[in-house]
Image 1 (cartoon, one colour):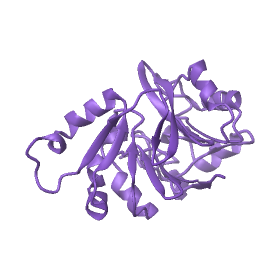
Image 2: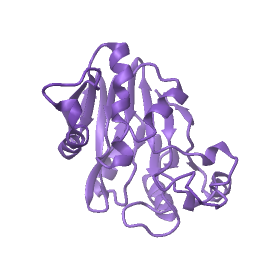
Image 3: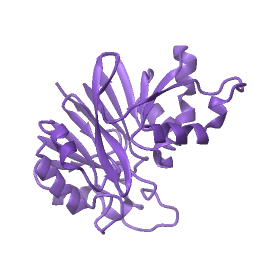
Length: 254
């Protein structure tokens, strides 16, 4: 399995218009973050988790030429806004794109992208097949995916485990039953927005404590705000086995 971080930032990420903080002025490529998304390649199977506003640029930058499915963690715009840009894959692959999400996510997508779902479609609009998921395991072309229910303030959303890789973003609480689903994971990805308390995201310290509790071999933090600090400085603070992810980071498992 190969995992590529397409984006590790937030809508409060970098660069921020008019901001003169150290991170926004940084020349370190690791401080330049698109909205959070990840690409997972399992054999011939190509999956993307979330299609934020930067999706087209992310796909081009990563050189992804085939895509078999899109999975959504939740319905917020910074995770769904790029769905229209699946259309080149429709043209190239000559098939509808399977889109997996909870009912609330699919309903939101159908409202936001109503032109995709009308009876009389404009030529060239994205072609999708919506597939509802819940907390139960599902498969895509033989690959098993385990949803991980977590809380984003009062909004129930999903993380996902594929083999020994677990991806959780936009969370500030992981229930005990979900922690059991993560046990034994080799690579954990967890959101760490900023240092200050936040209503719906783990802070850096909360993310560190959760990572230690889960005990994965290696944890990477994503969904990073420019308020957190520079990649170089924050990485120096982190315990062994925990690191900041960055756009373009690639991992190989198994």
